[in-house]
Length: 393
Image 1 (cartoon, rainbow, N blue to C red):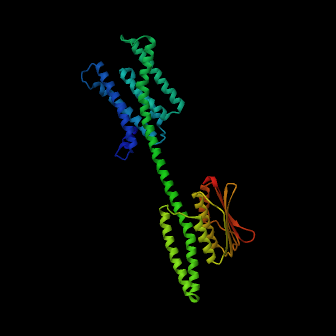
Image 2 (image 1 turned 30 degrees about the horizontal axis):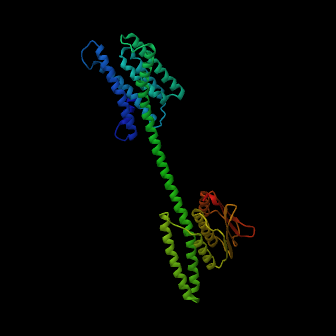
């Protein structure tokens, strides 16, 4: 009763996933017609006349088998391990084999239930042995029935092959259908979960990309806006026209930042190494930093050029925000198939913390099998080194 109630609870409402309804439909298509057929054959041997008498005996047994098998199949499809699963399998064996001596030959078809349940409950080899024993035993039983009949199939060898094939067709194929429907539902659920996980990973990756690009984009832009604002304030008293020019350039820089934010949100933000280098030189010069640039990196692949451009932007932003630099050098070269970018500046005494900008830059480099190293130098400066294999881009 608890098993039947559990099945009824599983089937109550339409909250059951659609893949589980496939299991329910296959169970009904395989089990119920067989119990009806066995009941009709039994009715021919009963002394009382009602046509439903044999079915009244086999249908309850068939419903019981279906309830047991459905509980096992639904649990298997959901990846659930039932503590009482062996007892359900034993109950199926009892319902099939105990009444078999008193039921017609068609009842042999009901063995598909324990055959389908065996691989759901037992380990691989015990399940295979149990299924093989059912096939061999059913074939021998069919041979015995054929021998007792006056209409034999043919010679002994032909008869043996025929009944073995017949047993495989009527038992193994339906049992494989019952097991396969539950297995298919389980795979569909696993596929759905995998797709959901991949979607979550893609969303998280996109969120990290936007955060990283915004940090790299706004870090230098906001530093430049702050720098130009301070410069304009200092120039107001002595050189109003120069201060006005700085304010105008500040406004244009703010507009460029807004356009960059929109482009980042659409993953359309393109960076150019030449433009980033020229902008970095101008910003450092405006901040009073003596800058030297020595970039010899012609014909870089697009992905590698973007990485180096982002590295220049991030490195210069760190110089402006986290140091009191007076000199800065930006050098780049290709050596033995490896593109190397080095940014060095003074005025950075003491330990340097690891910010999110350098972490984002390291992530970009790892995507191209490269590396990023940054740290203080012995003379109180700071060194940013980016190394990326040219072929990986």
